[in-house]
Amino acid sequence: MFVNKQAIEERAFGLTRAGQAVSLFTLRNKQGLSLGVTNYGGTVTSLQIPDRNGRFDNVVLAYDSLQQYESSEAYFGALVGRFANRIAAGRFSLDGQDYQLAVNQSPNHLHGGERGFDKVIWKAIAEQTARGPSLLLNYHSRGGEEGYPGTLNVHVRYTLGEDNSLVIDYQAECDRATPVNLTHHSYFNLSGDPGRDVLRHQLEINADYYTPVDRNLVPTGEIAPVGASPLDFRRPLPIGGRIDSNHEQMVIAGGYDHNYVLNGDGAGEATFAARVSEPESGRVMEVHTTEPGMQFYSGNFLADYGPRCGFCLETQHFPDSPNQPGFPSTILRPGQAFRSQTIHSFSTLID
Image 1 (cartoon, rainbow, N blue to C red):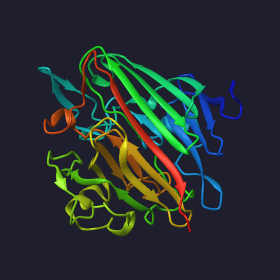
Image 2: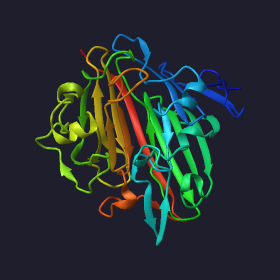
Image 3: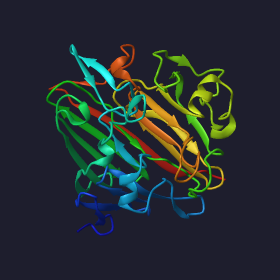
Image 4: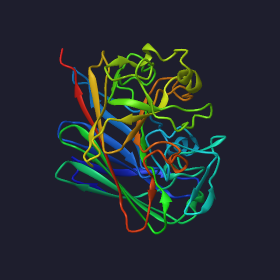
């Protein structure tokens, strides 16, 4: 199937172990950028971006085959839910009832459980929009799936903007109160060489505070200032500059794996969250989001490409929010709509 051959292409991406057919969609804008997305997990498999000399490379870590995505626990490029990040011991209480979720990263529940949104097939509709080529993905999460209460209808739209942006719009509705925290989990390497580490990338994060974690990588409930710590990226600094610090938080996580409390205005419009640049290629990525938090993960334990060969900037609500009354609520109720937007904008440094 072709929908505007220049902008959107669909081809077969193989069969799952259960025999389900999976498609790979390629979106292209007029500047030559391209985005590869499979409806297995809503997974971004490629994002071809030019460097300062006009050379295009894939700037996200990816696998070559569907079978690798099925076997992996790395969440490369995936849509993550029903609850992104960790829930302590997989337990929470809601409206007087206790719930036990899968403990799939002992001792916690992580990224939706054993078969989260990254391991399901989404319905996909490709279309051209005023902003650029787009892929709308839909998934119906049944009540009780992975232990969560109520059904959840999820809609995610990827749009490759003609302004060289990747826009991710999320929406969800439920029939019973349930925790909802959705994010996207690409590992970026703006050098375009997945064999190189990302330690020279210059990172800026628009956050004065973060949520410290305990030794199980679950937030303690404290909201702490980043100042005078290796977690302070309020001005651009290399990712690797302080990554091996003996600061307690860095030792616990083996590097960066922390949720930042973004300095957004809370008005519902996407605001500046982060900027990353890679000196050699000149590639720059800016992130804007409506979310209150962002998990910065420096790929400390990547097995397939090597440690720290990719970084994640997962825009989200805070980890373990169902158990943390002081955090912004992640509870969605019938009659409400969950809406969220994150924009990745790409450019190059000017020499």
